[in-house]
Length: 140
Image 1 (cartoon, rainbow, N blue to C red):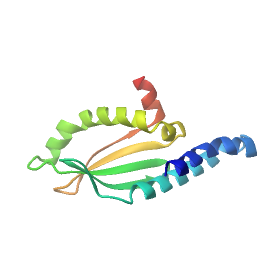
Image 2 (image 1 turned 90 degrees about the horizontal axis):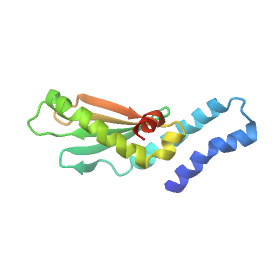
Image 3 (image 1 turned 120 degrees about the vertical axis):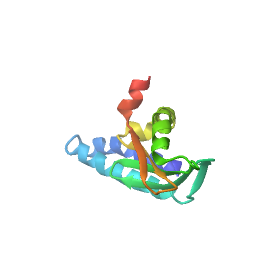
């Protein structure tokens, strides 16, 4: 999988050398969408997967140039509102730092990584946050 993704991430520079700058942004966008789709397919093969006692990764989806990890949170008796209030900012801070250190190639190519959390109890969306290259640059 790493070799496949690495090849896809090198393609934007290949486009520049073959086609010049004309329409380069569109070509890179299309290539990023293909990379995201391939990554979602590959990463989603072994799901669901338990992350911790409260969280399970249930899907990886491609949404254009955005790779979306979908997590289900089972916090026992806590309400959805309580989970959002207590967890969103803390999780965003910790996850953003992790994404910025492990997904640099995706981010440098213009791909956005998004984490979406849903309630195991109600199936409702709790919160979502996205990380792009600019956000990682502000952490340095």
